[in-house]
Image 1 (tube, rainbow, N blue to C red):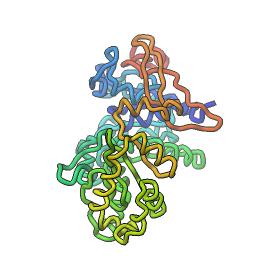
Image 2: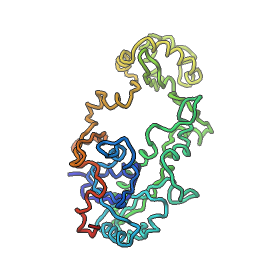
Image 3: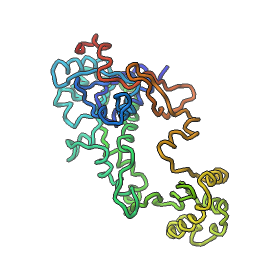
Image 4: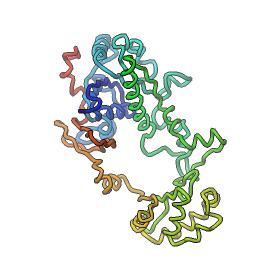
Length: 380
């Protein structure tokens, strides 16, 4: 038994944030039906690199789903969609604000068909405010949220995160909000409209950086791989490459000093507390680097593990995917598509004591399951 196996999701979304969220729902057993325009409406299908003509970008957010096609600009297709809504639990979409209403498919209209429907709308800026009708992609959100301003080297330009982090975080909130709405529906027997904005999500994810400014007026600068508030907490060069070391507490710093054979630094007034270490961070980093350069990363990792101090290699993507911990955690999967062959993917990170995530099907091709739903008056 899967926890969401009796839940049906009508997924009108495209690109990453919302599709990644519906994929997590599918992993938990929901029946997720992707609904695209007959000519294709998800540009992510066209983004390379490709595996057997299939976009690897598209593959990472669409397993365990079905695909049908509808042109919602036509009255016939809109009626067919409403027929599907009657038996659905969730409508997930990321059209621009107002588009669903213009098609006669707003939440107010959909709940006339099914009062229990949960409608989750994902947009760049939300349903209200001066930017409500503007498009917003992940890099724009990273820029506007201030995230880019605190990311990058001190003497370099503002830098976006190397993955679509605003989309990724929003996909998690898609799942959280929908599960909360389902729980609410269990108690009230009524559906819900969820207004989820990428900018809101990214702002809420500024964490300590936002808290520091709001409460003290402190504005964080770009610090490269250093931490805003803690030292030593950054990348250090070793004889064979970079290593992240995070002595995040005074106790860990004390052990770190013992580990590197510099117990005197533990008593040095410049470094004895985290506050003092941050004030004298440049000098401390210079001293530590002179030591870390004397050994390889693996030699230091062995010592870090011995002293229980957090640390790890700065891996390439290839090294990260192939490291023993990831293999031991069984995080890489393989699934077969009858037309395109075997596809590898990173598995869902959720691990339960008595529930196994099931990977039933590869990401669907456009309209792959339309015939299955012809009984619902879909176009033949």
